[in-house]
Image 1: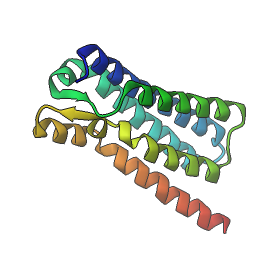
Image 2: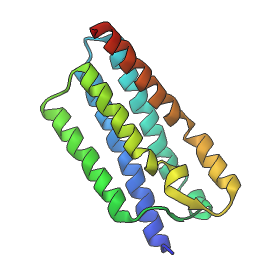
Image 3: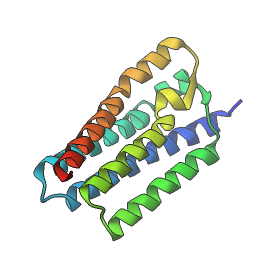
Image 4: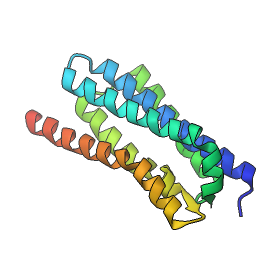
Length: 158
């Protein structure tokens, strides 16, 4: 069983992943500022990631009482955080085009979904898990938005 220190560190890593994704989406918004629709979608997605990070930070005392233990080990979370930071660095050096960025975002969101609160932790009670799912519901919506936008831009290209 994870110690409270392990659990808090894992929560911090999950929060850092959300913050890093928010930074990534803000960089993509700046890179694609010439396309108002796509830039606004990136900005909206960045705000959603920031909100998820805030849920981890502001809810920390409540989370301690709700979360029994992480489902994954800390090394896996740190590996994914490193991957997100590497991608952010690559985007800073050479921003991808819109379609490539959308493909990347969809793939990242799918990979990182394991580290969203309802998936990343065991909960003391089922009601706690349902609350976490409700808090993270926007993630499902922004993945759907990313996929829908990708299809639209691919159709325009093709």
